Amino acid sequence: MSNIVLQPNASGTGSITIATPNTNTDRTLNIPDEAGTLLSSASSVASSKLTGALPALDGSALTGVGKILQVVQSQGTSSITFSQDFSAYSTIVNATITPSSTTSGILIMVQNAVDGCGSGSYPALKGHIARGATSLDGMELVLYQGSTQSHRIAVIHHNYIDYPNTTSSVTYNSNWANSTGSTQSGTYNGAGNQYDSSRMFLFEIEG
Picture: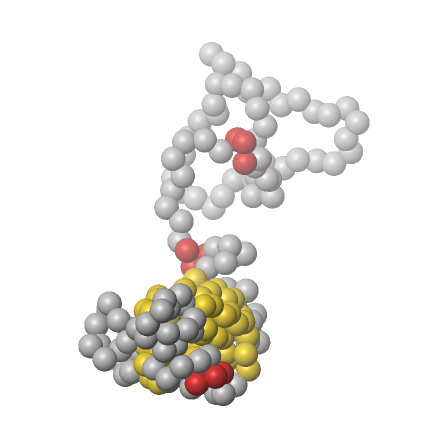
């Protein structure tokens, strides 16, 4: 028969009490046949000690991992005309989101479907992501035109993360302007399908 030995500590002055629960059921606690230290609810476990398959985690209980709280998608629905010579910007697609916390970040991902025409020159396009009337991040590009007037169509991806510090609704715009030549369609939304439309995606990320 194996024995249970309680080994007191000669230097300690406190007492360890093993308390039984209020139960009317006989229960057996099996002690593993190996050396080691028993863990309590106050103990920590090194990550190197975790092996095997972990149980499924409830995402609502996770903290500090940048959870995506909500996603908003918007698609351009009509053809927009760029202003000439950067005289003004036109919004080609926008989306609105209401953050659930003032600490949330908003990841903005835009697929800009644009058409530049420079009447035989090299048309330049300027664009920026804006929160309302506030410009957040911009870009400029030149579409190679060649020697004759023709259209140059591009799908331009533009990403930015913003921290609006509000729980009120926020509208983000993708604004573009044409530099030279005749004003042209700024986004191919005429057919209204996934191949010629600008799109905006907003992801609220837990702060």
